[in-house]
Image 1 (cartoon, helix red, strand yellow):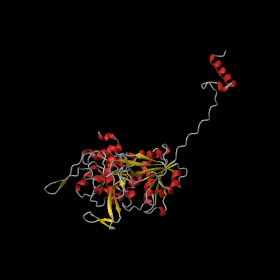
Image 2 (tube, one colour):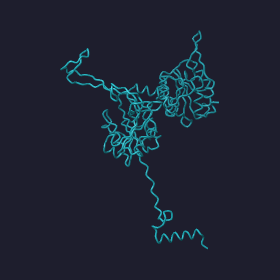
Image 3 (spheres, rainbow, N blue to C red):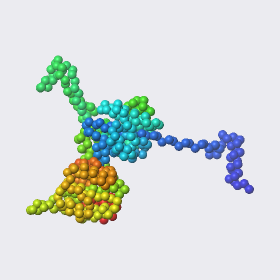
Image 4 (tube, rainbow, N blue to C red):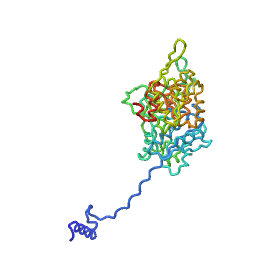
Length: 446
């Protein structure tokens, strides 16, 4: 016997056959649509120009900030960006190419004609773009901006892929009054007293307010917001960029960033400032056991508090931390981990401490970097898998050799800035035990 539901269905179908248009929307019979094909995600190519011939800072793109070469920092920022699908470092330098590949990027070798001092970043991007057919959005990412974040890269990308812009760039809000000196030759010069001299062809310098009227100084909240181009990241619609051949065409979107992170490295002073800021601005990652094959320790200032007591006979005495001894013993007992104490000091206390810890030692070494390189070769250890702990500027050459340069908490500012990780504990107060806990587990901190 048909149910009420069956009868109702048959009635609707009969009505629809007689007059489909007469059915109410909820009852009208419709042919189900074919499922829509999933939308293709945009192909986003990040191009990092990194030529080898920098003059302001020689080999600039290989200089380390926060213990990581600038080119590798840029690659890591791109790797962390969710919207980037391809990363290419454009370079003419084999050392930069090696560093880029080790960091996880592809390499596009740049021909000499676009690798000189006058070569533009656009030329490098256009050349790299030829190797990536089907790219929808192309990014220009500058490794001279060490504090660029993955979120900012995603921001300029989204402005083009989702926001309807043709181009986008990172900017930092600024409320500064900008001035410019303009040099004019207009037939009127100025004598030493400042009096105009008619008919003079002397060049005259005039100061001009660029974003303000010299006669009117409004409060910050009453002025329009200005933005400073950070020089860190740009996004362009790929087809439009091929046509325009420059980075600003069509509608340009501004992606706001933290002004504290806006820094471009053009000269040695910029590099020094970046290294000083790195401990404050970097989100530090700590090494684990899988990252390390060897631990090399400086002595004074890392295993001691850098003070020396001298008795009347000239004998030197230093204080060490028992917790460091426990941490070093735990590292030593990890059978596949190699240990070394490396020190410039010739003081017998260094050798005595190494004997007690049962750790090999090289001391009285003038060039610790050369000794470290030779030791790595003898031990068959790749330098990028070495953790080196230091505290002062004589450790910087070793920092440049290893994959994990680590500074203790009270280290020199330049050393902290060049480190990839910094302990929270000062040297001589348990810093080495803290590092051992990074590698072997937090129970060592108890």
